[in-house]
Image (cartoon, rainbow, N blue to C red; front, top):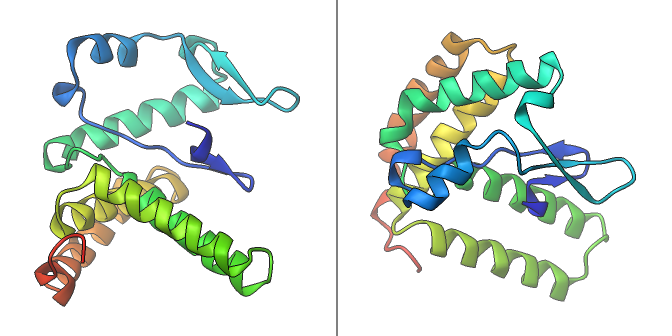
Length: 171
């Protein structure tokens, strides 16, 4: 998706294959038809088998890691992590004068709608956020699963016991 690559950083949004409809499972498991940011073209399709060794390694590690907690993920996968990253970018852009107030409000409204469409509660959103953050820690710490598990095990109790867990979704 286009919004998954911006400002020189890329995001991975995951969802359980078991929860997808059969035709979407087939598409997700196909080695071709994936999109990769190109230097000259906006987006170009690629085949997973054509990735360089580093790309295959990262893709395989991501799939392996997410597979460990996929049953815990809500319908929105780790989208909450991506949404939170974008919220940070929008806030910084507004503070730096890059975005005007109306643009800031439109962006925040769009991100809020995206979250409301993907999740049915704060608890789902927080589970998604914790898993997405753990995936990020895993990827930036040279695929160190211990770092990711330590992070998630410390953050989950804090977030899931916060006052936010008691707020009605959509308020």
